[in-house]
View 1 (cartoon, rainbow, N blue to C red):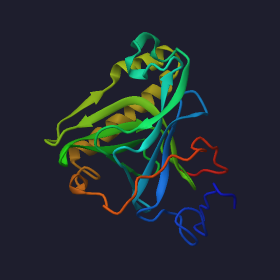
View 2 (view 1 turned 90 degrees about the horizontal axis):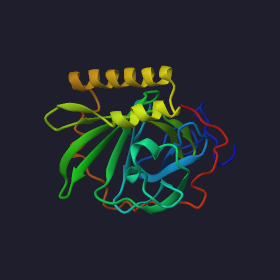
View 3 (view 1 turned 90 degrees about the vertical axis):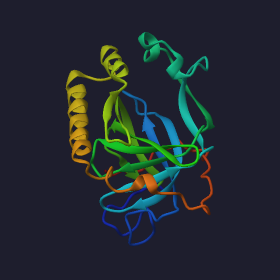
View 4 (view 1 turned 180 degrees about the vertical axis):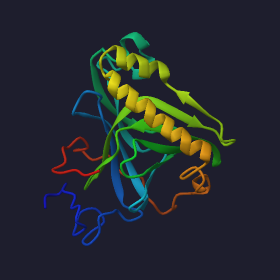
Length: 233
């Protein structure tokens, strides 16, 4: 197998011989392609917390060196007016993750991941449902494509849609078809069903989780945007 090959038969690949999963403490890349593009424009080095047939949990430590998109003049994407945010040329830049860390949870073939945020002092802040293409695994990590629309879930179990303006603008400029937008909205409704039933992972106690103090902060490799030889969901 090549360095990036995933063996879906379990005879090799992530986690070593005889395993198809990563071990706790292994370091991976959590990446997103640009919409309507094959190029990776977001890359976050992370540490595996848990990886099994039903869940991948990974931790992004404060200060982690990441890749994110910017406009070609260096303007942060979120500072560009919405009307031109998705039409102006872009580049990528490297920089540290500011603020507290993020725990990401994803289940196989599910069109969203759930992120946990804390304030300083490990005061739990909220869950964040990131609607996205189901993760595609490769030896170095996981890849997806963000779908603009998100959901915030508060500690009191209340929830709200987020970024509906960006979701609508993405459709207006042709980054998302009406059919795809409908599927994304339906995925969001499915996530809300889980939230309102208080199913996993919201009910699993992850807000009380803490990282292993012996873990090092993963480095951003020079070939962070490499193309995997083979991927699987």
